[in-house]
Each structure stands twice: as structure tokens, then as C-alpha cells.
Length: 212
Image (cartoon, rainbow, N blue to C red; front, side):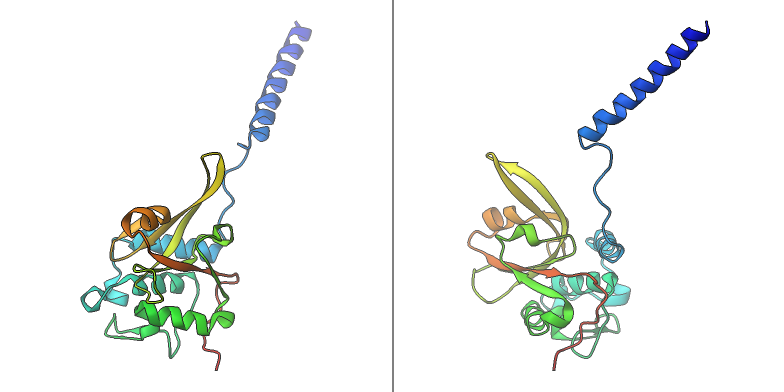
């Protein structure tokens, strides 16, 4: 009887170990790595406000041309950035700078202050460099006149026709969305559109102060 109980316990332990080993080998022992806290805060804000505008704090700039840049700026505040004399929104959208709420001026501001902001520009074919929280700038006509901006809300490694492919999902305003697909935008919604990414480096709490 004692031997039977010992064997039973041994088989249960061995079975449990086998299950753990199989899961580990299959890559099922852990979920995706957690995002750094500042990026998680940025994403949480974006997912909370992609269709629930935070007008009491930042207003709504759609009546004056579009709210996409306003929304991206808000997510960067959630990430840890701070306003300054060139990048700001005061009094719930009553007083805002072009770098905050106007796409061409925002992109110029990023380019002029990329080093102090921790930004690196990448072309759309450099998706392996891109992470959640990064910025996507578009020119619908495929020129240097930029029309729209969103943030990256998800990066997914996939395989298409046997080749590795990286899906980029985006959150933004105007066409309010939390997981808009970059390929759909470029191939279906706006064929011929162009643009680029701004990768936001860690630490993401650096103040976006101009480099004068």
C-alpha cells in the first residue's frame, strides 16, 4: 500500500513536470513582455481617449482643422513629456501652439529638436525599429506636406507569403481609431501616401525643450 501511494505521487509529480516542460518549450510559459511604465501610461491614455475626447483639459481642435496632432501631444504628456514655450495647450484648447496641434509644425518641431526629445526618424520600411508609443506622420498626397499623425498602439510580428512581416496598428483622432492598420492606410485608404515614423527613445520623460 505504501509503495502504491509513493508511485501515485511520483506519477503525479512527473506528469506535472512534463506539462510545464512542454509549455516552456512551446513558448507558453510567459506572456508578452510588459511595456515600460511610461509607455504603458501613454498607451492607456490613448486607448481611453481615442473616442472619448478629453475636452475639459485639451479641448477639441477638429473645428479648426483636425484633432490628430492634439491627441498625439496628449499621449506624450501621459508618457511623461512636459509643455514648454513652443509646445503647449492651455485653457482647454483656447491657447495652443502650432507644434502642439498642427501636423506640419509638429513634424518640424520634432525634426528641429530630435536630439533633445530623444527622437529618431525612420522610413516606413524600417518597422523593426518601431515600438508602441512611437509617432506616425502621413502625407496623403505623397509629398513633403504632412496631413495626419497617429501613435503606434500595437506591433505584431506576422508571416505573409512565407516572409516575416511586421504589422503596425495605430491610435488616433479624426478617423477615431485604436488599432488602425498601417498597411490598410497605405494600400487601400490612401494609395500613394507617404510618411515616416518618429521613434521615441527611453527614458521618455525628457522635457521637449528647444535646442537653441
